[in-house]
Image (cartoon, rainbow, N blue to C red; front, side, top):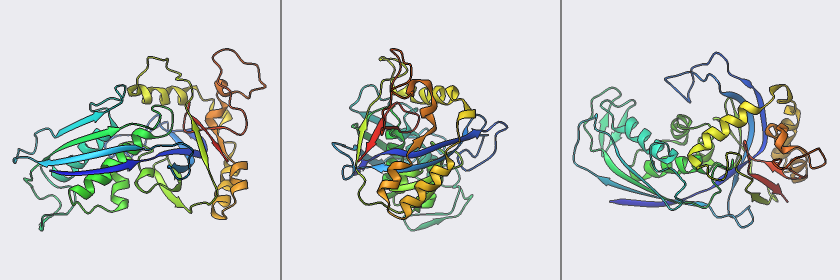
Length: 319
């Protein structure tokens, strides 16, 4: 049995521009078998949240155990187990770490290899039948990142699982290979393959790294759960869908010049200009009205200089 424990960090969105909704659908790297109908085109700037740059932040810990099993027929379901100390986190096939492990097994241990690979010194050409031992995989997640808040904890766990299995199984996949796999799991997952600061385009999954910036310190906050106090993180996708559905697209995509200024500020290491150009189109939703606007009991205000991350309701402060 091989075991590896890795930290799994969070993210915030320094900028998030919603540029429109995909109507007809299109083929692409994030979903090779279906259209993107209903997805929203984005331009966003991700910033990784770590213990070094964030006050009182503790990352998730992901422990991956791999045990080789007896040879099985190619169509036998993979043996994947998810264990999490947070009982509200799903441990079935809907967990993104489960999807990551399942994807690795399907890609590398299927009835035919999709790409050329080397397994224990034996070259396996693309399309060649293989009869490899499917591993038994156990993934234990120690949860610290606020769940279903927009900080990308589930996506981070999935990316960490991809990287961990790449190492444990000696697959030799490059960062670009891992990003392609990550995009099949979720739009935020590719960012976490390398982390740091990056521009995300298309639906957020097309990643271009940006230079690190000195002098930025973050504090993150959990917002109220818009799905109700009994909603589980399995409803995170529902929460995001509802948030996108609630957007008035005529109010979105108006701050792309600010995004350009933000990217320039990152490239020139200008912390003050970065803080000045933070924005998120989800802040146009009524529940995030300015604190001096008419409100009612269900309104969550975001006083300056706090900003949402992702579709919220989590938010952050940069100092």
